[in-house]
Image (cartoon, rainbow, N blue to C red; front, side):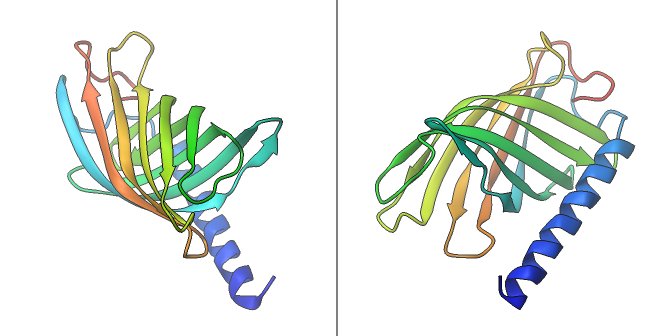
Length: 175
């Protein structure tokens, strides 16, 4: 690996460690409405491309920054099929987990599905996901829609995170 690659890798690992430490410290509820929705901008990088197993890719992992009324950090780890992509191909997100962590607390959830549509170059894609959020039965859910660009190393992701809060609203440790 080149010197630049090593620096990028060390930087990504350092950012991931900061996110993990922040996760351990976050525990309160983020200031959020009891019901309603929230849309935040997300920018990040892929820190692990995942590990192919059978006809699936497991653990493709991203970390990033959440910008907007509830700034913080985020992580997402997804499993998808097929395990590879190319020009005009489509990957289906089958499962995974995500989390958003800010000064006021955290929100975590599991991916319910989604897809990644690759463009002609096979290096830029449109991503659209859905997920559950918060405690089971809270009625909270959301999604992410954005772009993954593999022309950069590490690959960059950006888009909008939408959270819709259920009737029961936020609970300790979650929105």
